[in-house]
Image (cartoon, rainbow, N blue to C red; front, side):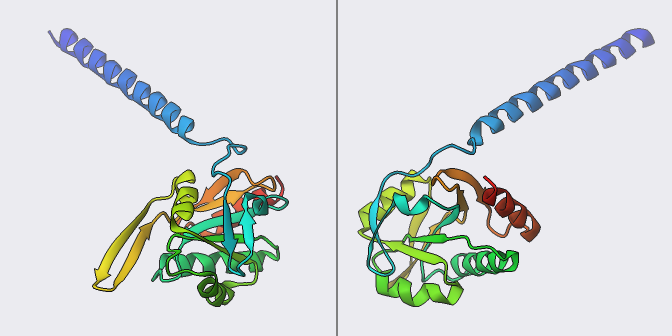
Amino acid sequence: MLDFLWSRKKLLFLAFGVVFIGIFFISDFIARKQIPEPSFSLGEPFSLINHLGEPITEQAFKGSPSLLFFGFTYCPEICPTTLVDLSRIIENMGIELPIYFVTLDPDRDTPEQLANYLPYFGENITGITGPLEEVLSLANSWGIYRKKVVTAEDDYTIDHTATVFMLSNKGDFAGTIAWKEAEQVVVQKLQKLLVK
């Protein structure tokens, strides 16, 4: 009887082990399918204006590795913190890396507003704005979440994706930097970006 119970326990352990390993491999396979290859292209062609009021297209992303971030100038925390952190890390690394800041609030973020706001965070930041429909089309093509939230009768904020996209010198997607990601990890990612 004891032998029978022991063999049943072994069979149960074996079955659980097989199920666990199967779930692990299936989950790993699904996760890997969700990670784009470094040459994976996101975004779409666009024609908007920069913070100087000049036309800008996706061609601006080509010729040099760069960083792309979607936000808005009235953002209370995520946007200013991200821009400060990126600018500081880039300066400490002693490198030049363009940052493109696409507003998700073009109704308030005119070229003039962006031109007044961005210099506080560094000289290598280019603001991008334009008609709301075209800005949202660009944001959607990068998978950006954006939701307008009314906070008062005449005021609102915007919930949005806080991810920074890394772009290769061909303007292709080359990875991401997460909100408040560890600085040493960001440095390693930027170092790899620069040698691609």
